[in-house]
Length: 168
Image (cartoon, rainbow, N blue to C red):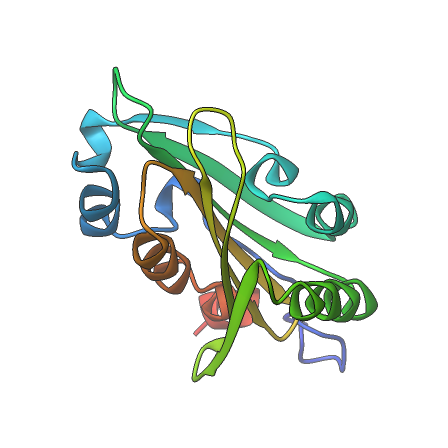
């Protein structure tokens, strides 16, 4: 019986992280095509910022994350997708909403979007989080814009990735 047809939820299947984004999104964000960028897969927790987000990332049921950077510069970003337990997702969204001095929130067709900036190493880290059902999409980076992180998160919108859809 295929997943989901026996009354259970379909298994979440994410593509390889380096396949989450269209090449044009990477190029628009850091100024080089993916094949010219430095790419690497990384733990999902490394893509998020702040203690509440890191604690939530450690509780992810499944996740994938990777980074893209322009060689010989501090321009780069991380993209990741995770499936969170419902209470973890709810608690994190409440914490982000309460941190209105750091994050702005907007509701959209793809889910709830939080954007903000936090202090980082060489530059301020720009963050975009999307919550859509049990999916948490993260885009974060330095020497990039909030709008670029927002567009990257939307591009990686993980609500479209399930085993059920792959079987269609």
